[in-house]
Image (cartoon, rainbow, N blue to C red):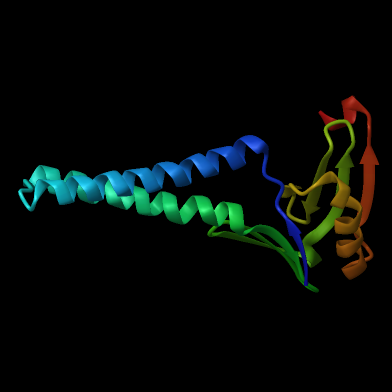
Length: 152
């Protein structure tokens, strides 16, 4: 099984780091507020604490998972996309065509049922990715275009 890391933009990485920091800050501040109240908590305040801690826990689960586990894994029969907790599986048998749009630098997989997906890895890995897939199913068509008209 070959692994290709998902290519996150700098803005996405910064956003994930900011989300982690905000989650940590929200949890720490809420814990401080709970401790400083000394047990004098109303129902409304208790609900506010619970919701804030829940949102902080979600942020601390989702954002690190996106940074750590965002990969494509190519096995003999399928391509598995892990984007944090989200898992998508594509059967290699269903792929009919791979197209590289050179003008926009996008690699697209086309499937039998007229679905498609855009592969988001480093452009330097496109050739290895394509060879990896076509090596498992040689009948997949691979082509590229640098014409603006075809990309529309």
